[in-house]
Image (cartoon, rainbow, N blue to C red; front, top):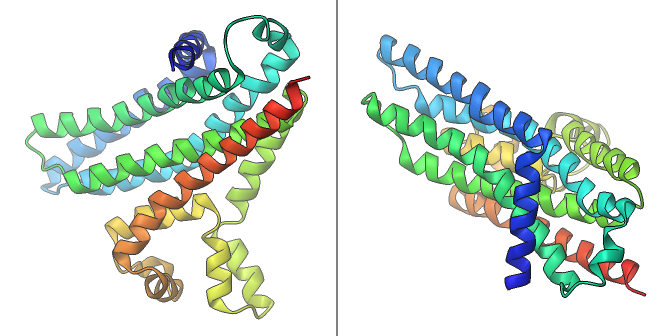
Length: 275
């Protein structure tokens, strides 16, 4: 455990010095925070409580921005160290491969999740000082969504990084994964499958295999429990899971996907880099 935490600390220090982290923090801690501030001010003047609506906007923005940031920066970790010859020094040090691999995941997770969470927390604190009602239940669930979103794509990123043999290949694969998930949201996937006369239950089940779709639907479910905006698809989702069941599924499935992906990545990494 000591080796793991030392590796995590080293990764955190390196990330804090990187330019990608400065941009990442600026996006979530600066631009998005300003979006909250101006939105809350406007809602207060008009007499409406706008934090709930802005939390939905924030989670939608995060769903588009967070995955690509996590994937592109994470895939460089293993692939980049392989190209830099770090593994040759690693095998000569008293640090196990498991401690190094999982330590990088822990450190990267802390670096990824903290700015996103602090931006949302700062908005709620500011709202409290302005005597604007804060929907703490929604805030708690959205925090959990952000946590599992970071875990999901961090695990996928480590898997890609363990498979790819070069940084360029890893970054290209990460971009293709993100683009595929983005393209195959409900509109495109369901439209193609309905034209092929696939059963609605099968089409929606396949759509919910996409973690981005799970996050999007879960964010809407908290604001709109009946999922009216999804149309007929809502009936299938609610029949399969129920309102509460789907909220639980939206947390368990992406987290499990991230852990399984990271575990497979570790197995491949250990087999591929040990003599």
